[in-house]
Amino acid sequence: MLNLKKKRLNQQGRISQKFLMLLAIGITALLSIGVWWLSQKPSTNENEHGHAEAEEHAGEEDHGEAEEHAAAIALTAKQLTEQGIELATVELGPIVKSTAYPAKLMVNTDRQAHVAPAFAGHVEAVYVELGQQVKKGQVLATLLVPDLVDQQADLQVQQANLELARQDYEREKKLWSEGISAKQDYQRASNAYQQAQIQVRATRSRLVAFGAEVTSQGRYLLKAPIAGVISQKDLVLGENVQLADQLFVIDQLDQLWLEFIAPSSEFAEIVPNQSIEFKSLQTGNLFKAQIQSLNSQADVQTGRLQVRAKVLSNAVELRPNLMVNVQLQQQQAQQGLRILASAVQKIEGKDAVFVAAQHEQKIEFVPQTVSLGAISSDGKWVEVHSGLEQGQQYAAQGSFLLKSELEKGEASHAH
Image 1 (cartoon, helix red, strand yellow):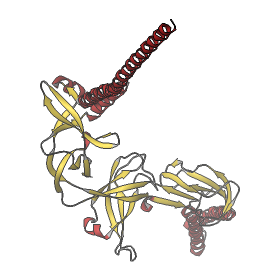
Image 2 (cartoon, one colour):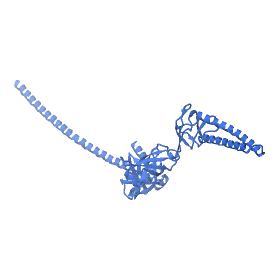
Image 3 (cartoon, one colour):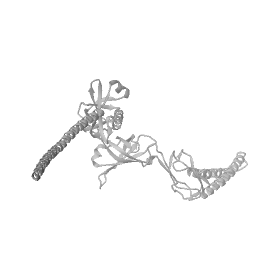
Image 4 (cartoon, helix red, strand yellow):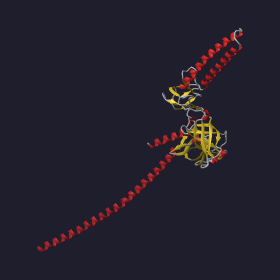
């Protein structure tokens, strides 16, 4: 009995060991399958990631094509006419180059007046201000002049003596004609009368020559000798001024001088009576002048030549001491590839021209960056170094409208 029980227990132990071995083999197989599946999953992700990159790259290419297409502005012939856009062709032509030199507008001293008193005196009144426009003969100031008081008093005495001499002359003349008085008395009275007349005329002439009024009671009126603008004023109410003190300077600004320094290389290009142009640095406006004089010798140290020209233009903005640029043209024009200056626009800080090309029923305009050279003296043409070829069409007029349309398209694309 006991042996039978032991046998049964041994059979149960064998069964348990077999079960455990089968269970271990199954778990190992499951783990192997799990490891293999995990090793295959990253490759799948990499394939998916590569596919995503390919799609993204394709999207970028499509986006680039869209941007390139957006940069082109297509217009019909009717739209070109309505917006005033005109086409021109890149061509070879003469370009008259000009060189700019700094210059300065100066007062024309031939049309300037320095006002000084003919007498020393006391300033009683001042009637004008600095910068005021005055007319010829206009009273600028009044001076009380002691010397003038004495001269006017002498004139009054001489005029009284003249009247007495006239009365004596007429009486002696009448007596002599009636035979009552001697001829010598008549001649004496006549000589005295003539002498009195001479003294009165001399005193009066002296006062008039100094610009003084005969009956001004010692007041001397300082008057403007020419019409112009008060550019300097050196007197105030109540001060004493001396003879020949410069109290006012009057400038006529309708004709100024232009002075500039030219290098020796330009000597042959400058001749008297030559017409030149100069540009205002404030407004950019062009004005004309005529060469008047050149220094007979160049500066020893710099080798430069001082040139003076007469300004022919008359504009309100032209004032003395204004800095400008003189445009000196070359005598011979140079041939070069050129376009109209009105076609050039600044796009992203670079010079650009809208090149035109026929596309089906429309004309497409694409901005083309260009490298430019000299500008013609009249400002109409500009030299092209690179970026364009001869025969290409471009927007010569209305290019600023195309630039506006381009900027609008970029703004909407950014949103």
